Image (cartoon, rainbow, N blue to C red; front, top):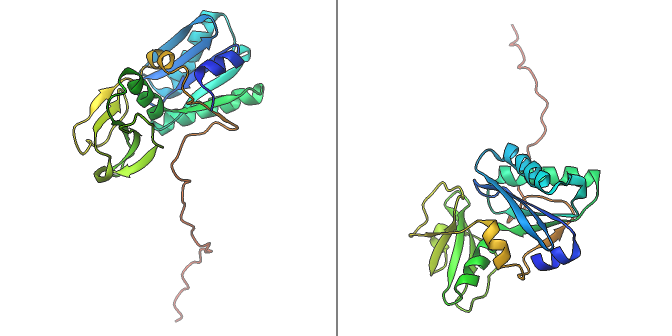
Length: 227
């Protein structure tokens, strides 16, 4: 898995799209050039494209000039993440360019770890139905695999939730806030291996959806009673 530093060494420009939180973040990253970011809390379906136009216009570039994409695959707002995935697939049809996925809780946890490696904690996000996405940093400073846990099974230690993430329930015990400002996070974790090349951008899911199969039955009108 490449790091941000490696991506910027390999590609002349990287367009970052993140709609996992209520704060839609679009960034244009280029080697040797200050990063350009656009943040807005409006509707993802509009703000993603507003952000793209803004950062490209500032750099006097077009979408065809972008060498590669990076996007948050989740956890987070499924509507926002799928809107990003749809946009990336469309742009890849117009011109085949690589797309790299990263996970929201992993970059948030990595940023917190870079600031203080002396304690264990977990970054969590509401997964609904009394369950939570959980990205744990253990007492040795190691990042554990992302988990989907019932509220009662969240690990011991400090709990943190990323700022501006939607929540439908309260954590089972008090949780603090952690940053999800990519303009601050990405420079701090530039050497962390948190990106993954994907063939087709899509929203992250712990398990593939399971759909109930219904037997096919031809509708028949009720027979009239015989007289």
